[in-house]
Length: 412
Image (cartoon, rainbow, N blue to C red):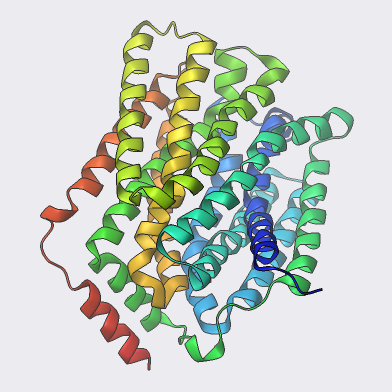
């Protein structure tokens, strides 16, 4: 019996989620094991342990600039398989590491491989959808994907309770192998050969030019980088915040999951909201809510006496706003660049991730047994983001459509 349109869409959303989940799993399953890993390699405790997470983000950031142009040139499916192969290699290196330097090399390769699983699926979505439809698919995928940060830390905690931290990386290797088989058998190629572009330095230069010359794409790309940076700062310091500041012990994974759940709730709601409301308005009011919430917490916590309950309420509200912002901002940024979706998405993700890596490392490094650096980071990022997306109309007139037309014509 042939599959219905609805069942095909459901499988596509599940497939999209599987592809993008490996990067999140490589982050969230490791969080409960950071202390055990640092002890294995004799690391100095404190903020230095954050490098285990930060090096993966670095590999992911660098990889994002490569996979987009490559997928525009040779197709989406081969690049996905290349990325998974590199991820599997990084997982094996982490398992077999006999020194911290080898461990970090493996983590870098995991991030570099996972970049393909972040970039290419978005290009696949853009191949099939655009605008509100694209935001809806991404939100539905996010609502499934959000189960990863909810369940992954619990999975990691369970693994290290019966084995050592290396078993986590064996699990990641096996899961990536299964994902490769699924993609090989079930994922169709969405970029026909006649729509492919030449991959090279000129192509990358043209993608950068098209992206940076489009004022709306550029403004939302900056906002994405700012918000991703805050989220990265939270991920890098989350274990310390819960274990050291709030002293919750092994319950860290439960509080981490509770906060992450609000992103999933927002993503499910967003899939409906985009049918009735303008994407840019949703982003504006979500940013405004984030600014108000983080500002109130900064005031309340001026004497560093914030309770765990107050922190969780505020963080859940902020993450709810994140759930409304990420897929919508990506959809808005990519909409004018559909003819070079892979290259454009690669450029957008690379630049926003460079911004995020700097901000996330800065916020994480400021951890001082207080949540104040994180909340000030949310406040500053929210304010700068709302300035970026609302000041577009005051930018000088650009050559958005003209530059795109020139690129397309030159490629022909």
